[in-house]
Length: 435
Ligand code: CMC
Image (tube, rainbow, N blue to C red; front, side, top):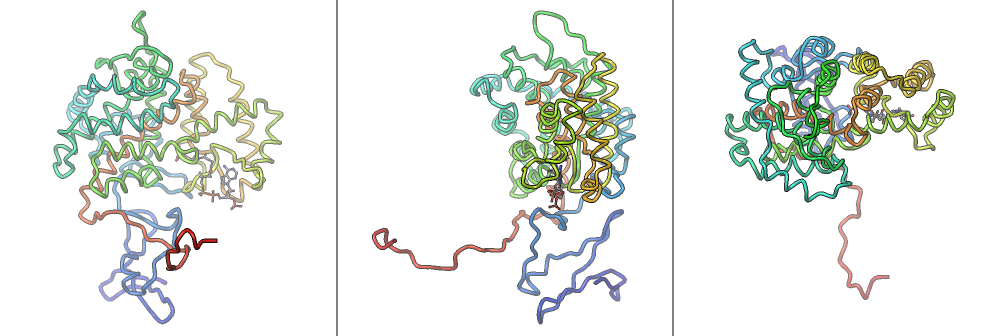
């Protein structure tokens, strides 16, 4: 229950048996208020219980705002639709990291710094060859990004703001290089060095698709589409991988190790792996005539099947990123002159699900991953690279959130409590006595 205390601030009261506690209520600039439960254990002897953090804010943040009911996503206050259409990924990186859009001079300086950090230590190439050729590129990403901390000792002191910034620049710059190396390694082609005359997305495309024996020309429409995909995935407030980065960083771990932890979390099919899973699902459905049966199975809990690319923990409305992604999908297929039957399956599936009582009642709408697989496949990426591309984009958000956490005076090591349901204290018995 909320009330206004004498000082004009809000507070909430909680009664637990014969114990009472008063919790300060904090307000953000927009969005719901939060009850500060930091003293609940001290005052009542009870913990709060919230698996999956469905009602728990773990930090205050100025970076990204989501209104899941209205389908709103803002980076530093700017709507995602405007950024996706008018900005560039590198500008979005600056915005997430610094809090404001750059002036022309600030952007030029940032672009030049990031561009000059795109190469990785040459010894990294030998590190790569230690992986099996058939390793999943996300496995290679976990290992190689973590390994950056062994190569760049001059940017691992988290207490030095300069080193924090250098680490941020390095991560934004080197992630595409490592991702492209992971791709090239999996297809048995030579690594392609970054080209500093190209923009962020074009450079990534040439590192992935160029070969040393012939010239490679980046299609600007496709590069722009990829850049837009990067913007759409750049941050999403306290999602699982970002919270993982924050939790890892809360112990004082170096930024490269924290981002590697985020990559590991992103890999799961309920998070970043969903675009790969969504495309596999569309392939499995194969034809519009099979949709009805598939939707029926997705509604049956015993089938263990879900409609991948549908539903979101926060969005209970159309994911605003999905709209832009759908437009990008049409644009890319048109530019390439591709008639992809999977797009027909996706559009029909979307329509059926949007009108189905089960999905309406549970507020399950298409999320960003529903269309991204079709676009990425058309751009030439194999499904195993989809989550890697997500990781390249999300690095901007991870590092901005990590930096914000390190600089937050309220920051503490993240250490959740638990409800213990195991055996009570008991005496050790010798093996001969056990039955
Ligand atoms: N298909 C069928 N039923 C679903 C689906 C789905 N895709 N998603 C949720 N449900 C049902 C679920 O069975 C449950 O039903 P009930 O209330 O009867 O038990 C109800 O909806 C709520 O589901 P939940 O798992 O409790 O919801 P959550 O908020 O924990 O999960 C989610 C969110 C994204 C993990 C889930 O919707 C899902 O698994 N979606 C498919 C995977 C996917 O597309 N993930 C990408 C998320 S967007 C990219 C990103 O940000 O990483």
